[in-house]
Structure formats: C-alpha cells, structure tokens
Amino acid sequence: MKRNRKKVLLIVLGVITAIILSIVLYFYIALSGNPIEMWQKRSAVVNLFEDRYNQEFKVERSSYDYKRGEFDFVLYPENDPSLTFRSSLDQARYEDAYGEARSRRYIRNIITESLGADFDYLDYRMSVYEEYLAEDAFETDLVRRIQMNSYVIDFSWDVEKIDSDGIDAVFEDIANRIENALDISVGEIKIRIGVYDGVDYYHKDQIIEN
Image 1 (cartoon, rainbow, N blue to C red):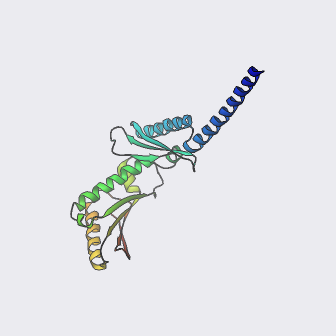
Image 2 (cartoon, rainbow, N blue to C red):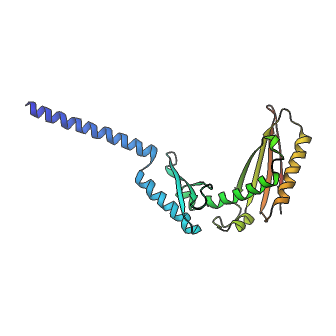
Image 3 (cartoon, rainbow, N blue to C red):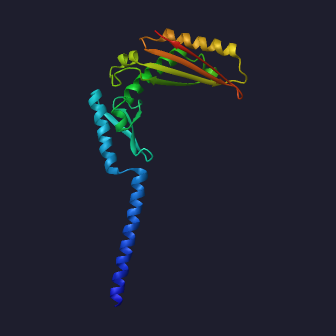
C-alpha cells in the first residue's frame, strides 16, 4: 500500500512538474519567441540581403517584439562592420534597410565635412532621414538611390534665449554649405531646425533642390 501511495505521489508530482514546465515554456516563447523560428528567420533575412547585394552579412544581435510577434535583427556587411542596420524578415520584403542606411550615412558624411567644426559651439544634434519617393525601393546602386529619393536633415540645439535673427543667419549659413557640398543630385533635401530656450521653440525649414 505504501509503495502504491509513493508511486501515485511521484506520478502526481511528475504531472504537476510537467504542467509548470509547460506554462514556463509557453510564457518564454510568448515573450521571447520560438528559438527555432528565430534561427530560421535569421538565416532567411541574411540570405535575402546577401542575394540582393552579392556580399556577406552578419547578424550582430536579435530581438523579439512580442507585441508584433516578430523578430528583429541588427545586421552589418562583413566588409563594413560599422554600418549596422535593423530589419525584420517581413520588413526586408517591402523596404531596404541596408540601402537606406548607406544613403543616410553618405548624406551625413557630406554634411559633417561641409560644416567642419565651425558650428560645434552650438552643441547641435543632427538626424538624417530618407523619405521613400522612388518607385523602386530596392535600388542597390547608392548614387541612383540617392538621386531617386528625398532626405530630411534635422538640426536642433538649445539656447539661453531665442534670437530669431541670429538663428536665421546660422541656418542660412548651414543650408548654403550643404547645398554647395552636394556632389550628386538628390531628389530633394529638406533642412529643418528646432531651437529651444527652455520656454519657447523656434522652427524653420528650407528645401534644397539640386
């Protein structure tokens, strides 16, 4: 009788343990994604970019967005580890995150070189965005991609007090330098500034077409 009770107890404990492990595994997959699916999509997204650009890509890290139920991957070309970009497999099928990253870096480098250190006293922040206007979102040639698309350049910095005339003068200088530095035609470039003095914002923008 005691042996039977012990056997029943072990069975019950085994069932409870299995249930607990199943619950833990369910929540792990729900929050972190299925590891088998992750490796499948990781391989697929790498192959997609390698086939498109005929070069090798590496995955720096992977993450799972449980709200979207989708894996995201941070990748980089093997010959240029500094150029990282983020893409999911689904995203890679309708837009080219690597092509965008290359274009934005090219534009940023032109701007950085044209401004030099002359505006470092502003302690400004700069962001470059690509706007998809081209019909071919998967253009792999860097120059053609830049010529087909438009870009937004955002500058922002803080001041003690808004001086619109002084800000306008700085803005005009920045815009002129960027326009003169462009060495290839661009679909359109919009330059925007946002200056904040702790109370008020001052905004201005200008479109450059070359």
